Length: 226
Image (cartoon, rainbow, N blue to C red; front, side, top):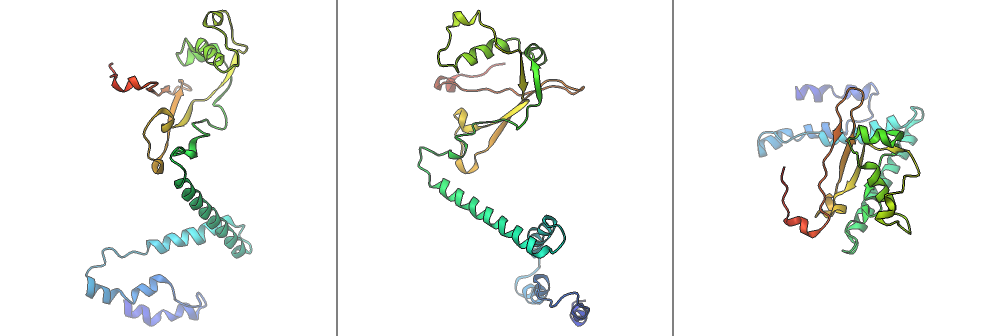
């Protein structure tokens, strides 16, 4: 079969399908016999790398073009991707050189990450407490907002203060950096974790994640029961 292929392969050039046959797959055929004699079976032989390059450099570039005068568009698309990859490598290299006091520079401005749009807009606080089974939400929200003002009220004064709003937007989840909770995280493999709190909707069961947070060093010697 290999001899027949080499005998008739010139028809591809004669028909104008290709200008030459200098491609990796055809070149590899010239070395199979010698390599089998020297090294045995071709178990680990594959052309996956070349197929992958064809997808990355040709097919995706073609899809990014408008199909007309495609070559300049494909070259421009590849050049931009190479520039982005080079810049990402530069950022990774510079972050590795950061001082030890900034080991997690990537996440210092994004400890808590919310979706671009809330899942529910202008939802009444009373309905939130009912749907999420959190009867103390309004009181806790008042206490939290009090910590964000320049001149907070005393705990006694807060008993007589009501919220200046009755509706808020709801997010059913958020992402956070594990290091922001005191976890020991390898910088090279630092990942974001996700917390979800979604009430039952449209006949689907609710999803409420449980989060246990250590807020002091004494927590390390305290066990959990139940």
